[in-house]
Amino acid sequence: MEYLIFAIALVLVLLVLMLKGYADYKRDEKQFIKRLYDEYGILPQKEYKAGQFENISHYFMKHRQGFYVDDITWNDLNMDEIFKEMNYTWSAAGEEYLYYLLRTPCMDKEELRQREKIIEYFRQKKEERVRFQFLFSKLGRCGKFSIYDYLDYLDNLEVGSNLPHYFSLVMLALSICVLFVNIPFGLVALVCILVYNNLTYFQYQKKIDPYIISFAYVFRLLDAVDGMKNQEIPVLKEDLETLRLHRSSMNMFKAGSYIVMSGARMTGTAGNPLDMILDWLRMGFHLDLIKFNQMLSEVRKHISEIDSMITILGRIESMIAIGAYRESHAYCVPEFVDRTQIEATEMVHPLLSDPVSNDISVEGNILVTGSNASGKSTFLKTVAVNAILAQTVHTCLAKGFRTGMFRVCSSMTLRDDMQGGSSYYMVEIKALKRILDLISDGDKTPVLCFVDEVLRGTNTVERIAASTEILRSMSRQNCICFAATHDIELTHLLEKDYCNYHFEEEIEDNDISFSYKILNGRATTRNAIKLLGIMGYDSSIIHEAEEMAEAFLRTGHWLGIDLQKV
Image 1 (cartoon, rainbow, N blue to C red):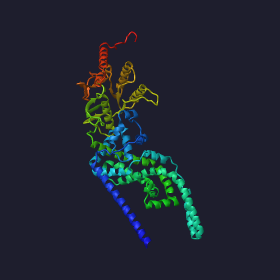
Image 2: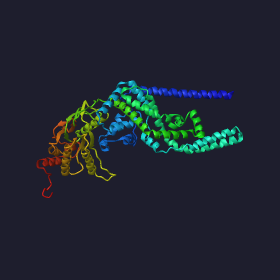
Image 3: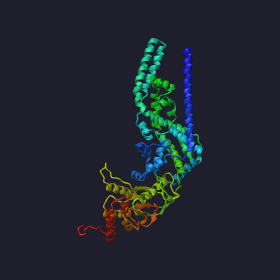
Image 4: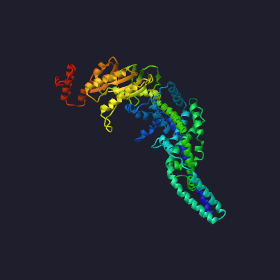
């Protein structure tokens, strides 16, 4: 009687613990859903570990084709940081697709209009947005690897034979049958076979355990699709139908999968009593090993459908993330025209906390001059970033933005290639050559290029001569070039090919201030020597430097140089 009471008490304790766990789970779920409603437009806190962008880029690396934003341009414009500011995603599919989106400018106006419909649908329909975001949170991320790393692991793994496991099951069944004929002999046979099954089980288990997490993501992917397949959303009609078709093709993968995909094995944590019972059944009957091979066969058979589901879910979540990004910024929807043109009003850079807006309207090339720290480079980056955002997320940080379709590239914040043994100048001329190659590759889509301080890595005479011809070559092609320079000589040499704009500063009471507003014409002020004074350099250095500069401007050559010996 005492044993029965103890057993009942134990069952009741387990039941209470299970009910408490379920209640805690539902409470956390409810709180999370409330956050999705209340914190729309507030960027989720996320830590990006070293090397994480390498993993995030793998969807892009797998699917890139045609024109894309290359590594130089991506790094010049600090697009990793812009991605972080836009990453309102909850799943690896959404995160990796958003990265792909930002690196792949779209040249199809109809595709951009379709993106706009999805973005605005989820902005206006709170319940649908939260429902989808909750499903994406369940899909989740992949830890330190990309989705496509896991899929590659599975695609490269050979499907093992189930014959040894079937043989073990047959022998187990025979030993049980022998029990009815000869109990002692049957027991010995049953124990021996169970011991054999347990020993061989762990040999096979070591091989499959590293791949369980790969199955786990596919499993969660199918669950997410299950949560969406009955939704009726007009702007997603074709996508949802495709998801239903792909999901139905994976029925064999999911059927009976619990024997492999129990909670403990998917999370690496201690399991509940049911998981413990399943562990004994697995060891004795090899059921998970048999099912693993079946599931692996199904994954390899349907890898294209899995890729398509990841793409569709990633695209949907990216559109929701863009809507959340819009919620926290002043923005406009770009207008696309069939001309080589950029026209922007009150345009700002997305990474500046207190930006100064600028207007620009050009159908040709512009050359920007100005003193140090006056805003030249930031202006170029502002135009470049907004041009990319227009053709990717259909969102510009401006009051208005009219543009043609462009292939965007830059040569701005280059560095010496220490490992490759290339000097700054070599790195720079290679970067400029790739822009010239892009312009002349025969593609009808115009190039929008940005060049900051052309050939700064060489001497003045050759820099001005080579810069003139490089920029002139860019101006004669299917291209709009935005260039910034300190060399005022270029504004005269290129005045037939480039419109001149400039930034300027004010120095008052030994202090310098900048308006950061772009102005027409070439720069007329210089501040490099004055900045030395403001920073506390000795007055004799300032005086001598100013005298040398003034003399050069009057005579065209430097004091102290004997021109006959040069």
